[in-house]
Length: 104
Length: 76
Image (cartoon, rainbow over all chains, first blue to last red; front, side, top):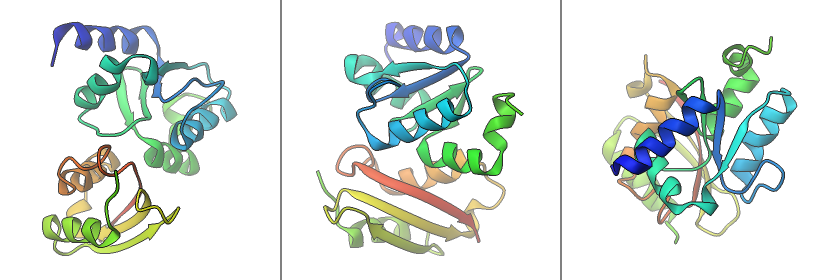
């Protein structure tokens, strides 16, 4: 993939410990799945950075290749890809998400 | 942008022959589905890897023709 986009995504993930690539913003999500993940993070009262992929088509397409994952939202915690909506919800229900976010 | 339920089922079956699949068309619009898939191929794999197997089976349709597919994978 294009080095400039890769660098841009690298920087976002490195600068933000909890980084959510989503459609819309945490305040105004534009898709039900992005809303769901955003709400889980808000519920856990963690600070996270929401990256609105609808504002940047290069990131929108780039992140799919970067993670080898075809859909948005995508959650990164400590530079590691955690998953999409289903995985995040399932991890939350099992208490696993809280562990990687250190909120226990 | 839509994909028939039967088509999703057959694509998954083709890639993962032992899969037990339950799919629901959530909105009745052939675009928002929920699927529960049970197979031996998931055993020992992380959730990310399990979901990637399904996306691979769908051959690039996920996120394109198919907008939303909520996944629940179960180790068989």
